[in-house]
Length: 314
Length: 308
Image (cartoon, rainbow over all chains, first blue to last red; front, side, top):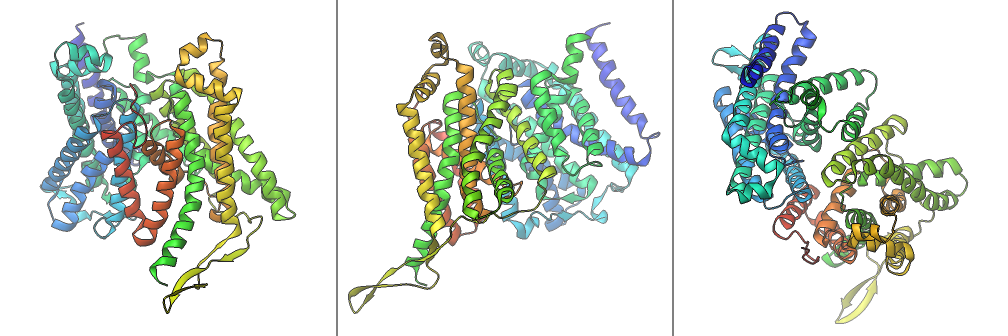
């Protein structure tokens, strides 16, 4: 079997299974899976930068929140319909990631991590400070009537599942295509050896900036869709925790793989869901998993698949 | 009250913040300087110091000064040992790789914070200060062209706050003497300059790392014990000191101890003064943006020297 066919089978198979699951899952898990698919799209966006370009950002919540607030504020204050509101969220993500990219990419390594963390923190505080518009910590609800997109009521569970599925499928297929394209190969070359990529004549800065903007825009799209589907926009989505989550999901699933972000999000979501029934200190699980991952499995679950079963897993 | 006494009050409060901040930030800076890793869990060691101080003082009872003295001596050591153990079990195994260390310390952050939530609970609890005499402060007033002292209402501080400033200064001098005059300090500086060369000369670099990591966490815990009679202990209190220490360490130049102290005084005082006149959130936004931009445009810090 050729590598291309195999990859189409694996990823196409995942999408078919996810599509089919909506008819058989009980309501609770049906709702969870819709949420997981949107969050996994966020993780896919993070993975473009972390897994494929080798840049670890600790401030992706800024992009997620840019999308969410771009969407939410235009609905809340401008009375926008869902479609233009989503577009506003995506454009907000594109702009924010462009500005942050130009500034943060002047640094590298640890400084890049701290700079992105600081910008995201400033963004979070700005959301709190502009409480008159954003309602700060409390957040605001996107009413059911404002969530009807072209005649489809997105607050209905089955529509919501399908919308989440559509977003996830688009992100999955787009990144699969991206990393197999010449541009994606250059990103991987930068991850492996930046100096060599520079010496080969590639404009490394421009490629990295593009990677930040693609990653930020996908994250913003996920944020905008999340706000629209679940009807709530709040400052907690801009907090440090939401910058750490995609890192956790991607590390757990496997950085630099296409299915990794989904596997990681699925695992972590249910791990936290189960543990929060036992204790309020559910972030303890996140901490233990992070430490265990860095110690024992830095390549994650899909990374292990790649090592043991199929070396060509994209 | 006119502006003068107001400003004096703000700078006194700022000086207390600066003293505690300097201790915390020097701990972070030491770890970064010698080990070249960023300890994101630093704020949680601070929190742990405060929580343990509450625990020790409530365990001992009797006169508040007795419990506090025991806490001041024992808690930094306990937290330091815990941090050294974390270094030897976790960070050593990822070979102190800068990026993986950040991820691992984020994990440690959540573990410490959530275990505290499970055992200590979500309440903020006070520690009684060992002594707390209220000191009224005079202000100069010109009556008919001649200066005259008077005591404006509300212009006061407590003896404990002054003691915090004094204690922090003593500890900082101690750290400086330790780094420049003792054999352990010599080993640390050698490791900081060139890890491989230090190893070649037979310096047990791994042990130096564990010592530095413990010392850094111990300084944060010491700062927390000093501040907890003013601030109360809470399981989420680690966030602000972490952020502020980051700001201080970056402005002062990563790894430079004198720069860190100068920056701590600068940030502590201005934080106190800005918070009096503006919204604290706005002050924090400006401070974080300033730090990010300093890192982008002047990565060696405002006072640091350019490193190759």
